[in-house]
Amino acid sequence: MEEITPKKFIINTGLFTGIVSVTFGIMLFSLDAHYENDTASQVISVIIQLSGIIWGAHEFKKANSGFISLSETLKIGTGISLILALISVMYLYTLTNIIEPGFYDISLEIAYNTALESNPDIMGGMSLQEYLEASKPFLWLAYPVILIFTLFIGFIESLILGLIIKKEQH
Image (cartoon, rainbow, N blue to C red; front, side):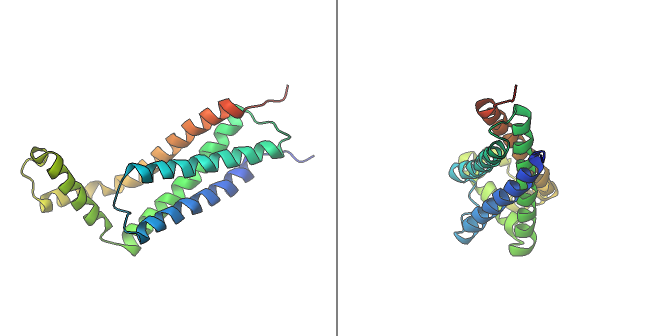
């Protein structure tokens, strides 16, 4: 009898979840809503990730005669999250370097204006151009932050899911 391993479920579900996430990103781009870092978009992204993890764990459990351990759920969820994070980073890189090279300039300008509106003293008299020049060296941090944050959220979601659905063989 063939041993059931999480690997196949991680890859298939991770790729599908990544495609759904990129599709959501393209939808935001087509609606010119990709600059808005609103709560609704973030919640939808987390729901997409959670749905992928639930689906992957459910499919594994079904293929494994109804059994799944907490560690298997954590592997599946974190693996799916890693694939999702890598696809998200590739999409962001493509968006910011090919599709819309001025993305970061516009995003930073929005952040600058928002900060000025909410608290004018926060910029300390810094002009928009000075703000852009000071911020640009740190834009590369978006990539590792996406990786770490997506993995962290996936781990937490997997932990909670694993505690709920675990059913181990005795």
